Length: 126
Image (cartoon, rainbow, N blue to C red; front, side, top):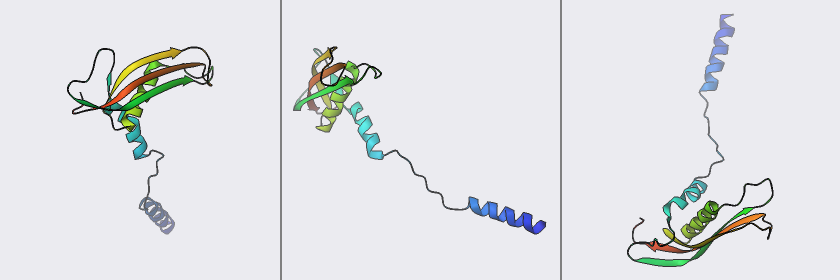
């Protein structure tokens, strides 16, 4: 009985000593892509970047309510997408020119929000 108990204990402890590997569905680059929006400063209305800045191009963002069970389109989501597109152009700021809500169904969306702006690169992020 002692031999069976001790061999079971050795078997149990040897299972704990094996090499474990950790696999995750998280991708480091996807996380960086998600947080790059926070590196882009949003300028709206009469607020412009201070100092010199370089224009990187026109960007837009869109939010779409695809069906009645989806969340409604929002201007905040459209601005966030525009900021992500500005970051893709190497900008650290975006000057929002206009945002608009479209509540009539068109182009596969029940409601849509659109924002258009200029991607800019400032000397320092504000």
